[in-house]
Length: 135
Image (cartoon, rainbow, N blue to C red; front, top):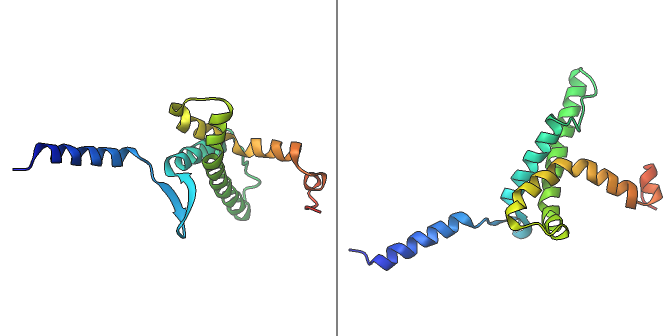
């Protein structure tokens, strides 16, 4: 018969493993990204693409549909990565509690495209604003 404390300790270990979220790594390098934040940012970007039409269709030929689909995929990926890296900064800037973490990631993912365009327009160099490239 197993000892009661060992069964309890094993149960606590399994419960704690289910609660903690591992960080993602690529090629052995830790990226500092949490999978749950990436998923929340991805869902926010999908809502922005579908409901807010942030990536509108440009035509109805199959070339336009492929181009629009590829653009929507890259916007969704970029928005989720932006949410993964900027959500902790947003929580610190606005002094939000940790319970708002995934909600903030959803909001950052949904607004990433518009916010990044505004930041580039405000703080970018004049050459970058004109689309000529960096000096």
